[in-house]
Length: 135
Ligand code: CDP
Ligand code: MG
Image 1: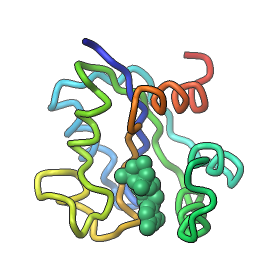
Image 2: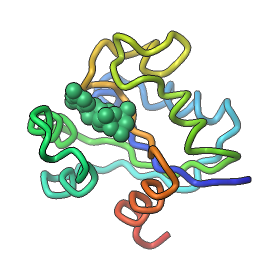
Image 3: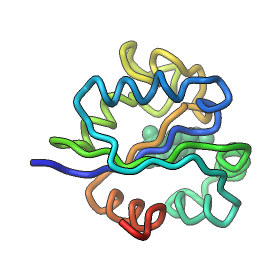
């Protein structure tokens, strides 16, 4: 069943010139890019996106990181896209993520871990509305 998920290629990936590398992994898997935009977000947009985390002690540095430069926001579509993207992204901590995943191959950080992917159908719907309200 075709499904849509929301992805962020985070500012560390943009700075490191890894946008193409990350997108190529999603595309090679068979996912379709149905929307994509290069943009920079402010603190209040970060707070909305990460609403579930704003009370965490590690949230202020995360907010600084995600607002530190341009990112690429995208909607990907395909069979079980939400779970497939999470598997391709790998575990949150790049130091522990499995080799073969984006984070496992390319990140050495628990914060600067290159990508975001929606974690459930409810999150995907909320995030797509938040980032691409016209879709
Ligand atoms: O992105 P994911 O769903 O795998 O992880 P999360 O637990 O929902 O956390 C969201 C994001 O917060 C992570 O992707 C990291 O960038 C960041 N984070 C952090 O800076 N420090 C932590 N201890 C945990 C997460
Ligand atoms: Mg999460």
